[in-house]
Image 1: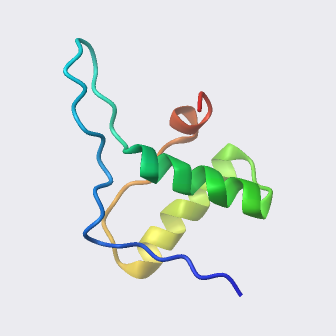
Image 2: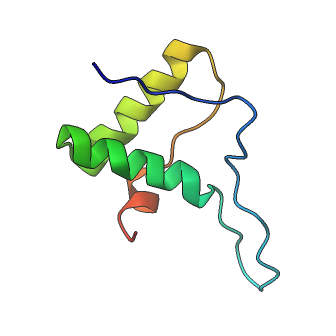
Length: 74
């Protein structure tokens, strides 16, 4: 049995870097969580994004999951 816990108080947005250009959208914790699920379940990046979105919908959170293009360079 595997339990995945989403804390509504978790900071899922990236902290400002102070550098020029577009700021990151997701925190390292949010991305690491998705990549951990990818490895545990042996999924592709697109499957991982869909899986994370469905988990968030099941627990009733209105968060967005990182897209596979965000996960791929990590």
